[in-house]
Every structure is written in C-alpha cells, then in structure tokens.
Length: 90
Image (tube, rainbow, N blue to C red):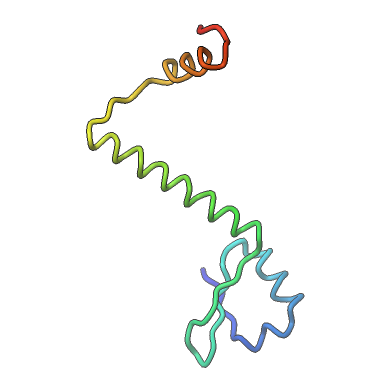
C-alpha cells in the first residue's frame, strides 16, 4: 500500500529518509490535500530505472517478433561473439 504524508512532515528529514528506505517504494507527498511530490530512496530509484530498462528491452523484442524479424538462438549469438572476440566456437 502506498505511503502518503503531508508536506509539513518534510521538516523531519531523518524520519522521512528512514521511511523512504524502509518502505522501498515511492512515498507520496500531499499539499493542501492534493498529490504534490513523490520521493524515494536512491536504491529504490535505481531499481525502478533498471526495471523500466528491462520492460523497454522486452517491448523491443516483442516488436521484433511481431514484425517477423529473424531471431537467433542463444548458441548462435554466443558463437558469433566468440568469433568476433577471437575465441573458438563450441
């Protein structure tokens, strides 16, 4: 469940920081009863960015599949990399 706190609670920075780290998810800040800001720990932010990158790459792969672009199996990919970097193919 999302954590929501009023903007006046930002004066206690240590408590807000502890909350962000313990929740491991964004904390929503309200001003005059309306959503105003979202804060999170750096670790949570980095995790969110990494997840977005995974979703982006999955979307690209799905588009390639949908458009009939030829796929390579794993062995072919690694064999090409080995040839490119001067190692023997298995």
